[in-house]
Image (cartoon, rainbow, N blue to C red):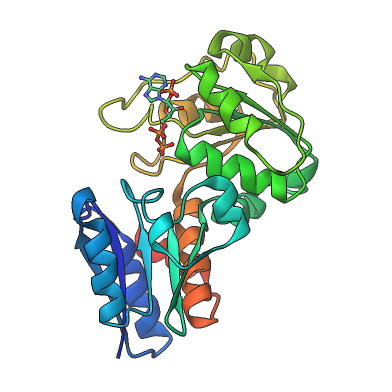
Length: 270
Ligand code: ATR
């Protein structure tokens, strides 16, 4: 039997164990996926323990996505650029780190938005999630991705450190509100809209373009205030369920070589 895990703190809320165990069963693989709560000060020892039991692969979540990197043997270039790892594969005893958050976001976006790489995009937020998405979009060839964030310095750092060519204007929240009509695709990555900020919006959508597409990486609640308003304005929207399912599907593919059926995964997560 092969073992897989997700390490984080907290971890009890994670839906990854149910998702991956279901996929192992569906694909008749003799494998099991465990949630492991690991405190930051125990991370080094925990990774040594995972090596010792011959773990086949694991996911990494908050707060270990950056701290895990020096403990691995190899890091994929996109994960290195992002500076965070969410998926580790044991390749013949070598622990190799990947980041499937941004590529998972893109795979999910493509379902609902045609020609995504020709769109003018605005990312709201400049934290870890924004970084993963921005770098993956830039690597995938999107030419123009602007960023707005409460703290402009963080947006500047994110854009400056990106190794892939992309044009970016950095905006305050107020500037983004005024220029909103320019954007074909708006990606909400802040924690506003999630508990304890349910019902709040990171910016006003008054000037939203009728033809825009709005996505929010939050999936709990299912419809954030931003998505609710965008829908009321007649615009197509997507919540974070696609990103969650596809980051998992891409991790599963790295571990097993099988790309699972995402429609079925979505039904099981709901
Ligand atoms: P994650 O890994 O989920 O992206 P993060 O790295 O802590 O989390 O980033 C959180 C993002 O939400 C940041 O863009 C943050 O803005 P700042 O860079 O200005 O801190 C944004 N955010 C969180 N709480 C916020 C609030 N109350 N108002 C505005 N932005 C907020």
